[in-house]
Length: 205
Image 1 (cartoon, rainbow, N blue to C red):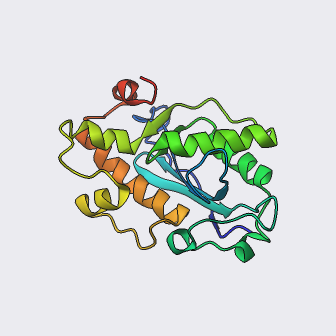
Image 2: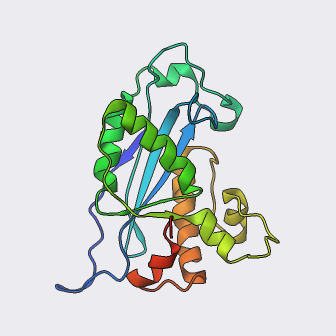
Image 3: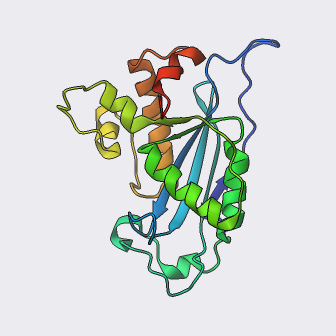
């Protein structure tokens, strides 16, 4: 059972023949049962799609655990219990939907390496092919603005800094929404105005 799904038509960019200034961003957040890539599992996935600087689409889903006795980790943090996962879609179905949504976009997340590593490992286990996507990390974008590390760059603190409301921290969809909002501020602060400006900012660069 998807906990929330809201598809809308993608925003149209300008007059016919006009190219988008920036690519489409798939802003992703996941909730996991812990921090260990080997021992813990994805519990929830969310994607907020940004086109032309506006939210074009949102989607989120819980992820059924393979075994009913698997631990869900810190319920006091993410609020997810085993009962709520029993009727959730199987992981491979969630991953296939996610792969479709990532196609042709920039995978964006706060601490992107963490989210991508869990997603890639799960996709490998379930034999789901992920599209080849460039990755952008809002954590790294924020840290670039603070080379002396004088401030915190946690998502919660960035929300305060940029006056972004996140009413349910550690819920994947709400965190993805917050990250998408923060992204707009970070792109501006890093002087990103067109596709080429992103080249030095992608993960692995």
